[in-house]
Structures are given as C-alpha cells and as structure tokens.
Length: 315
Image 1 (cartoon, rainbow, N blue to C red):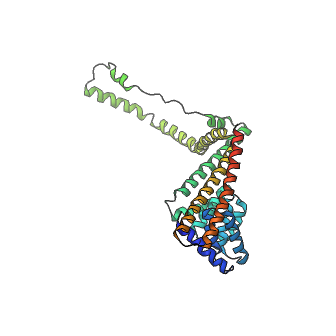
Image 2: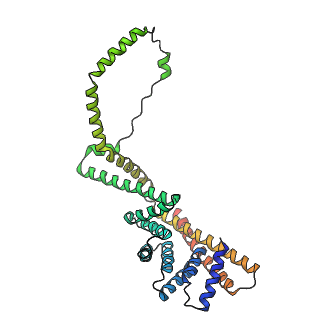
Image 3: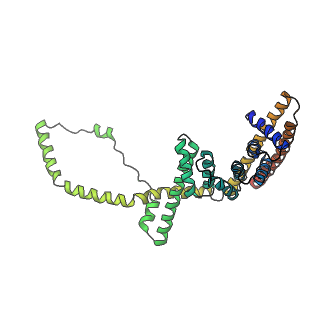
C-alpha cells in the first residue's frame, strides 16, 4: 500500500478536526475506503453531503462505498446524480457502467463502457466485460428462440438446437498412393479426355449455380438462428452444471470480499505502525491505528462466522 494514502488520511483528519466544515470529506472518506475502514468512510462521506449537498466528489465516493457493500440500488442513485452533471469522467463512467452490468441493465451499461474503451483501448477488464455481456445476451436470445420453438412445436428449429456436428470422413492418402493405378496414358489422350470432360461440365453449370443460389438463400435465412442455437446449447449445458450452486457461489464471493478487506486493513495497520516507529508520537496516527485494529477484529470475526457456516454446510 502506498504511504501517501496514510499521509492523506492523517492530513485531512487534522484539517477536519480543526474545522469540521472544511470541504475535505471526499478525500478523507476515499482514504478510509482504500484502507478498508468502510464504516468511517460512510460516516465521513455522509457528513460531507449533509454539509454540502452539491459536493459531487463526496457523492461519488459514497456511491463507490455502497457498491462495495452490495447496496446496488442506493449506489445507482448516488452515481447517477453525479453523472447527470459530470458526463465525461472516465472513472465515473467506468464505475457506473460496471454497476449497470451488476444490475443486468445492459442498455445503460454498454454506451458508458464503450466510451471508457474508446479513451483507453487497452483497458482489458472493460473489454472482457463487454465481450462476456454480448455472449450472455446472445445466449438469452437463443434460449428464447428455443422456448418459442418448443411452444409452437417447430421441430426443424428444435432439431437444429439438438444437432451435433457429424464426424468428418477422412481420406487415407497413403492407401490411395499405394494402389496400382496402371500405366499412364499418353499426353494427347489425357488432353482429349480432359477436354471431353469439360465439355460435359458446361452443360451442368447453370444447374450448379441455381443450386448454389438456393443454398445461399437458405444459409442467409438460418444463419442467425444457427448461431443462437450454438449459444443456447452451451448455455443449457453450463446452466445444468451450476444448477443448485448459487448459494455456494454467493458464500464464496462473500468470503473473498471479506478476505480482501482483511488484507487491506492488515496492510494499512502495518504501515501505520511503521510510521509511528519512524516518526514522533502522532495523535492522528495513534487514532488511526486504534480504528484499524478494531476494524480488523470485526472483519476477522465476520470471516470466521462465514467460513464456519460454509464448513457446517459441507458436512
């Protein structure tokens, strides 16, 4: 963790203690958020908005905190208020776009994430999110096509969904070359035979073109449906694989989130203690160390509770 984060917390906490109405709530709340002091961050951001209702940066920090806490509807309300005034902020668009995806609102998410990608084409997280969302949407559309086909008894469509690729027949070149093909004909005879064969092919050229037109028309008609068929089959297979696992996945996600917060707090606490050893006694650092220690105890207790519930469920 960057020492600058701790230094900023100390600096803004001193300013706020000297003058509770100084407009430093946003950077202080964001500092608390970065070191895992979610409660302190919420209190600071909320107090800042009480004093300054138009404090956009403070509202954005509050929205990010609410996202981390899983309060997505509240986070949306806060971030949308900021976005209504600040339209061209890449980090804000990034956060709001990811929030919309969590709320399964692709219509609002896609333009925001695309604007982020336009400014930073190497933002692979956003690129992967957009790709994954496109695949999910195609899978949903394909599932609807399949369900409609079942309702209407459209057996052709059902067969396409259930179709499996045929095994391609291979040709054993070595066996063909090993066969005795007999003596080779003279060049003149081969030329005459070739000309005769080509003359015969000219008569069926129109028929081949007509059949090709029919095939292309059929492919154009079913191309979209066949693509959806593939995604639908893939979606059904994976849906079956994860059926009944939602609770386990949710518990794992909660545990992972708490592990991350514990790591953040431990890292910040280590840095604060190092600063106190290197510098003279500092009341702000002492206060921060105390709050980090309390937060760490709370998070470790919460993690033990979550993991013990998972262990009992596994037995």
